[in-house]
Length: 117
Image (cartoon, rainbow, N blue to C red):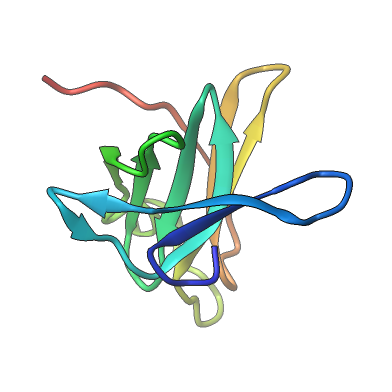
């Protein structure tokens, strides 16, 4: 991603662009895609300067899930210094654990995704 609504897919050997898709939700472009992680056939992308991570179908670019992390940082002990935006997604494939953090955050959070109906 370059921060727009476009995801670029690159050849891992040459880093040449193989294809690109526009990411949409309800037919509208989803801009400010930041910090990406590929997990179980889906792309997770933080929406820069928000508390949201979207789940994207890499074949179509359609957002098929939203993770709302509003209030996550406030559940931890107060930080000793200023913190910035949510901006980190990591996945441990061996243990299937998902972690999130942010710029200048003194904590890394392990989260579990629960599908809502």
